[in-house]
Length: 263
Length: 304
Image (cartoon, rainbow over all chains, first blue to last red; front, side, top):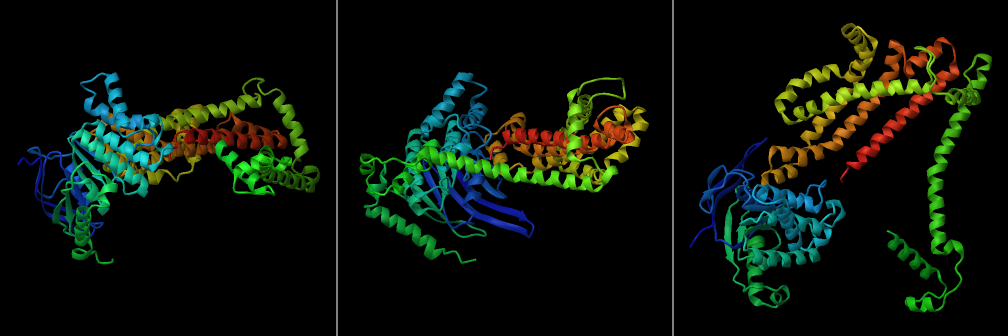
């Protein structure tokens, strides 16, 4: 079995004003190419910290992080990141935001026309062909998040890293985007790591659910295999006992074994 | 927008009609003559009248009260009191009838004086921006430089602008560069401080985007740093020009020659109080226009 993403004994310690704070410890995880992994846990358990380590935005204090057998040192174009709060640049149009990424990755090798084509294709992929020349403040939250996804996808990343991408959206918009994400991942075969605290989202989307214990010094508690057949349909799954069993297992982990004490 | 208004008012129309029924078809079937003010156009009309009223009446009332107070003050002074509004208005009409006459170095029209003052503000401020904006960027970007400059800036910033005038006169030996120097040194601080604050407040999210996309330093500057600092920079520029305009009148009083400040002092020597009052209004109005212009430019760069 080929381990595409390999994390071994990763530990993350932050220097804070009150001294050292251990956010993550003993993280061991292997991800196969094309796999969809959901990271779930209570808030403050270090899910996003783990994602940032893979993204290369922060460097692990200890441990080994390998992506296709190369050490992760800083961000790279083979890893596309979708941020929690979309992080679009407000002075650029949707097109401009995506183009910025395209230009950086393919600008040296490809013609300007081809770069435009790529940008447009990424916006088409997330269903935003009509909003190409709008600025972020002129579109809805769901559309902004789509642009964020388009920006990550336009780089043709091998790994897609999503940090609670739908957390700030209403339930209907979220469901629509989840379906779209399933379609996109199927089309692009991207290996995906997604931070979420939505149990249904985790079960619906992922191949495996990585459940994390509470911080400080959080680690991986259990890993749950989601062996539901694809393509998955949210309506059919609602009647599926296997789906409910999996959902129950995640809930049991979160609310019985690792209930966060009220602060 | 218009679609929404039509919906709302047609809804009102339905609600107001005596035979209100849940079926719009029924309403449409039995039309009744609608009084003008209840009609769509009538409501829009009365709404815009109300808006106009709220926008125009309070300022007009304020100005009227001001002129009334002015009249009372001038009337209570008798023969030697301040000139009243009417007398000042007459003098202003005469003055603005020929704003661009030129009778030698010390007798120029009001238009020339305004332009000279504006030129000095523009030149002094331009130099301040030329130095202040890059310096602000560097101070915001490099902690070390910020530490170096902090004591100098906090020491020099509170100094009254006119205290710099003798230094300028001594160094440049001439009044014109000396007054530009005063504008420069008093208007540079807001530019530096606001630009630096803007740079240090670039949201971490945007910098993360820059790192994830692996942007070049140049792209980071043009696509992320500069646009995100621009609103702060515009605030600095606005404050700077405000200060420059405050200072120029005082500087010109001392250096003489041309400009609004010189003119005020000249008219004081002639004991032409009407002209001094007019000068105050002119300074105020030009300052207001400058401010409005910069606010308009700043809004253009506001993305929120």
